[in-house]
Image (cartoon, rainbow, N blue to C red; front, side, top):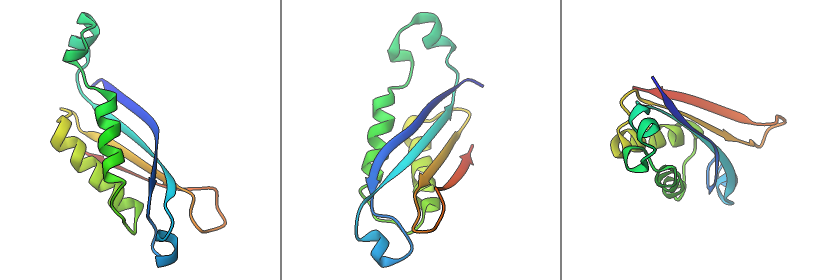
Length: 114
């Protein structure tokens, strides 16, 4: 199955388990991979047969407006929205990465939904 990969969409959101961590929006990186046939758009070079990357990015930005405690929930919400609104035939893979309030570089979760 072909795929479209949108790597490191930068969003500002309030996320974190401790209340004080959610008090200030922080940058989160979101990577979305959608599995769908691309032959028609590739052969025709007609974007109307494809998927608009800006539309997917806009949906992720809109979802970032909601406060959450976990990046797992954020990833799940993104996957559900993409499946509903863009209907990738082969499903979607979402990775959400943040800099936690811990002594480590980053924390990420990746979910795959058919």
